[in-house]
Length: 311
Image 1 (spheres, rainbow, N blue to C red):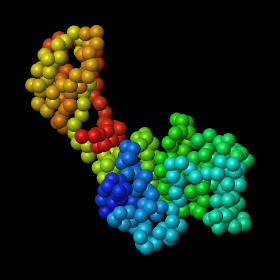
Image 2: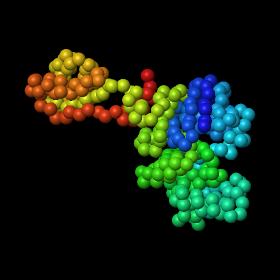
Image 3: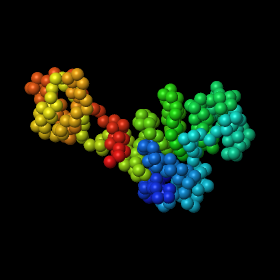
Image 4: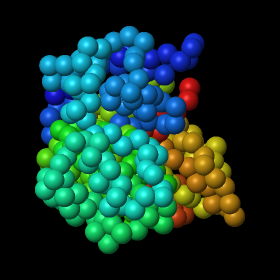
């Protein structure tokens, strides 16, 4: 449905988006992840025809952003990070105003406003001024605005930014409901959101795509390395380090803490084999008191940190 080809955007000498190519399928909820300044918002602004690229192109269906920007905008509903609301307007009046701009008339206008009020959970605040609303309800009004013309594509830039945990869950459920009928593209740096709501995740760092796939695929592609965390009591770390060097596939232990005679460290294991029995045998044979022993499960957060950390 959407094809991004060699997209590049410079701000002066700064490259915000660096030769990105990406296909987005119809009916997909795509999460665009990355640290602040990675190029997420710039990419979404170009996709929504708000900004032109330095080079490259984006195709939406059979249209492209250079020659058909007005037509493409008709397919897209866009909610920027700060919802563009008029705080002195009543929610109902504001939605009527948006409907008029979108040229919805008569009974269709009223039925669409009622439909969006139910979908976005706005029924109990329709009579309130927007400035009275919490951040969560303002985001809901922004969602209703973006969806007023029933667009095929919904683009959401940091839709849960600044919300409390309960509001995040509420917005997430709304997005998942919308994703059953529309193509949804959302940017976020909240990894649990992407894992819970998105069919597919694209991670961007320094304007380039560094990972693309479902969360399960990203975990699988990250390789077979895993980490074992250990805490031992009354032991010299140099002796520990020398002992574990003898196990095949185990990298040198890294100390993470020392307190009251307890040494905390972890071991990276670069083998497909589970070497925890071998590690435990070394601990047992040396008679070291064991206080903690667990393997770190690979999560999207681990992968994100590895792919976006600074050199």
